[in-house]
Amino acid sequence: MASPPASQKPILLQGHERSITQIKYNREGDLLFTVAKDPIVNVWYSVNGERLGTYNGHTGAVWCVDADWDTRHVLTGSADNSCRLWDCETGKQLALVKTSSAVRTCGFDFGGNIIMFSTDKQMGYQCFVSFFDLRDPSQIENNEPYMKIPCSDSKITSAVWGPLGDFIIAGHESGELNQFSAKSGEQLSNIKEHTKQINDIQTSRDMTMFITASKDNTAKLFDCTTLEHLKTFRTERPVNSAALSPIFDHVVLGGGQEAMDVTTTSTRIGKFEARFFHLAFEEEFGRVKGHFGPINSVAFHPDGKSYSSGGEDGYVRIHYFDPQYFEFEFEA
Image (cartoon, rainbow, N blue to C red; front, side, top):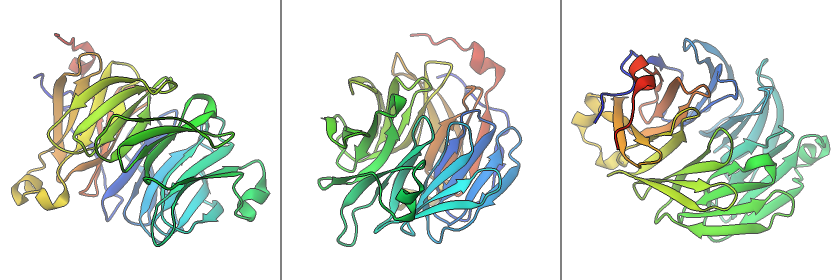
């Protein structure tokens, strides 16, 4: 196996008191948004790890975050039974949508006008995906989404917009994947390639493909439109997050054991690794150590020259790749 692709000292972001739940770059990549099992939403300059500010208002764990296409607005979903819209620059809360249960996933469509979020199945409420058009302020004011899709079978654990905002791709607790039309709400297709819960879904830069991360110890690559299963990346432990490089045929996976299976020695020496696989060959070619607990979220910078990881240890680490990484040729 090649030496780790990123050996320069990472930039450590310390802005959370609890485990990281999701990290996300904006489209340009100058900003990195981080959320955790505390109520704080942080935004950082990715170039130097300086904290730009926080979005304050949530009262529970924050499960998801997204920024729109031109980084005007930020969307967050929380266990406090709310989804909130923020002004990216000022940090001002622009809208609050109250829900009956925790908001698990959230996202802006391609144009930034439509938001979708999914809520958990809990306390007698079933899981729903709700769609609001921000161009019609009455929808938020009256808490009346233009569409609400019930998911009675298995709750949604991860969801993303497909290309051009025509549909969303949802991953479920059961390991199923499906597409829901953002116009009619009908289920367009449904497949089951994973045997356990899907923890994360991320699209490729050009939105043609997406990668899933599952509790069944694999990550899988799919075609966004047809849901055709293209590749599988296998590990020995649950995969919490997976991301696709925007410039190379590379995949980064983050994961680790369940908290109860983690030994004290492993947490002491920071042996939790991000693992790099070649997209075409499905072969692992490098690992980067550093976290003191499982990695919960990974993301590639949009320019492909760095990646970040957020861990159960509450830290976010920004890793810039070595020059060797860009010259590295995969020997099949």
